Length: 402
Image 1 (tube, one colour):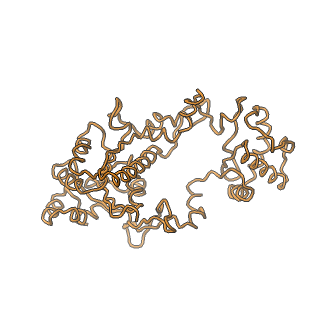
Image 2 (cartoon, rainbow, N blue to C red):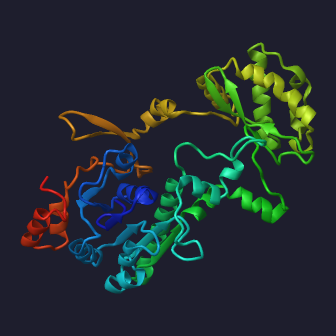
Image 3 (cartoon, rainbow, N blue to C red):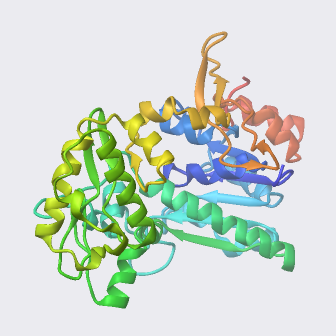
């Protein structure tokens, strides 16, 4: 495995769970540290912490802090989401940790970064999506800014943190020294809308909400529909210009003609010379009217098949049920059914490793850990004496005997 036998101490909350999962999928030994009695039942926790080992450790206690510092002195990575200015942030002091372990790659993931005037501000997903600018681009033009229902800032921040950790690992290979990677979730969200800051910097245009439409395609101010209702959901399609767009438009018109659909003004357009940048709103509305009627008769699966066969740009808008039965995922053996430990023979489905390397998918072979499950073996591997381990387990500073 790519990161074997590197050790990761994962002390993160939700903002950083995925970072450890990605490193675990790459082969690292990721040790998830949770306080004794922590609730590990939430689907989000289970999905992001599969493939890790679990150590029950109260790092807010004196004995827990000493145990953590001993492990940090022998670890390759530390992942944490401690609020700047908090007691835990003092424990995760980058200078002190690097002094004790010059090879440690210390990754901090916080709402606004560890430094700056807002470093100590708290924020949930809705604040981060707003502060990162994503909400300003989501929603109807005359409506309120919106955020995606499922929190998006944690996976954005955590995935950026994983990239930062790997860059630091590469640098360690050159210099022999670890680094402190300081990730701002607000900054990570901004990266998800990279076109918007560029639009302001290059064109002086501040992009705004357009609902199901796209702006900026026409110098005459026309907007183009992007999301269309179809027979059993929605599809993503836009009337493009350029070589690929013209090919797509020709493919759609030919499909509509074959199906006997009313083409309206589409029948008279010379797509070889079509230029979307010069389109007026009246022209766009006239083109989109027959397309909208046609899509209402088309199931998502048929749209996908025709888009493939006719080399058209466009894709069905998948929901979770669509993803679960997607033949592409099944064909690439993406899903992994892991035992739950709740009752004999029970399993739950997890996302597999995110990449296939040399023909083999990254391994996900550790089920969701149970409370205290790996405490004894983890402490032993970090050099704690049997007596110390028994003492910590007995006084509940470290988990239970499971």
